Image (cartoon, rainbow, N blue to C red; front, side, top):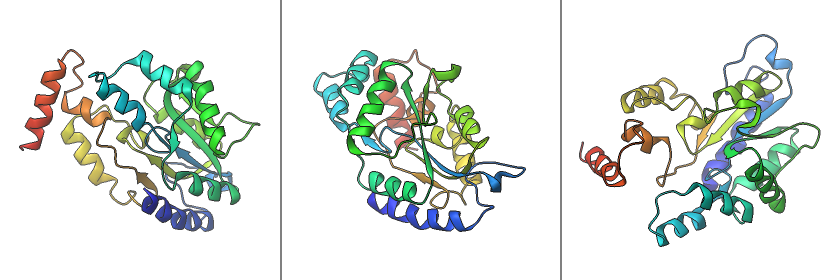
Length: 227
């Protein structure tokens, strides 16, 4: 991850020099807008592997209540390279927007404390922590990216999931096609932090069928590996 964030620093410098640069479709006089970065939080900026270890120890795949309790503990550590990069971006006058599917309310308050504990860049004059449930936003992050892009020139996007860049509720074949369609963005304007633990790729493998048993989901994963 340090290599990814070091590479992003070079691209940030380039984007600040090029007023037409944008990591998100923007039109009109967007080059006049102040610069911003949009970043996911979990497994992109904060490491939740300790929570995942708890789930393994309990032989649980996912538990929403346990996740909320983990968020409230505010114990997630920074992903290597993330904090240093964002501090550098802030020093260059770039606003950081944290677009997360942590829930509006108690998870949001705890997340703010977790980020503040390590000194992640912040602004008190505007809302930079955009959570699921806030302003009727769903887990689809596209409307939040559009929200930021109305007032800022979006320089770079960071995330560990397809949904951090483009809508992810699509089939495996569609995901592959979209990955190729946006090939020029990966590693230049879009920075993907690898996450083999969880993500929308799991839902895509399951055909977005929430009724599947845990065992059947695992079977789907093995079937995919054999292709």
